[in-house]
Image (cartoon, rainbow, N blue to C red):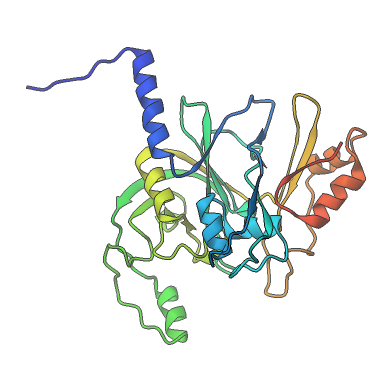
Length: 308
């Protein structure tokens, strides 16, 4: 005999909310602001303890990427931050100016935004993306396949690159803890399915350009995302180093990240950032303090800065 569970609508959404809370407990979860607002979160001040932890380990505790920590705290030793140093944890941000639907990935800020339906929240994950020359492409697509315990079959190009470093890869790396794809993978439909959102067996590199084009998450993060998203979920990948917003109360913010380098000689801290027409209009507006906005573009702190 088959049994079905028929719940009142309010109870169904309450249970859905509880499940979402359990699944996103390891991520950074924010209540969604009104459609006319984009600012979420608050930065956190953290004093480095004398415990020998790396900046990556501290970043992982706060679900932040390594590059985001370095942008917010320039000059900090990534291997052994000095005890007693007060760090800024960049937990405040502007939502990307694209539809708040499914998954949105902004390559320039190395973040993934997930908008669960009917929850009124956005969940933010730090990610690793394609390294220079193996860029993660811009696209609007969807999740075509969910793969638990994926095996890794290196492409001929990947095998050749490793061989040049003196490493011979097997034809297939079986599923398990040692698999570079981690324990979960979400295949994207675009590009004949060659791009995936997946885990890793080495957390160092989250928040950096480290992959062959796929999007990489920490193990707990991909586990949460894997169980909560469904096939067909919309995925949009953008590359916007500059975000800006006029909030409902009139406050004007600009958030600037280091742009992705195009060559080995590029310095992301000093290379020019192309401004689109909307950004130019925002900066030129009489309500924007232009000097502050231009200073923010030079500073590239990766955090919203008030410019009026």
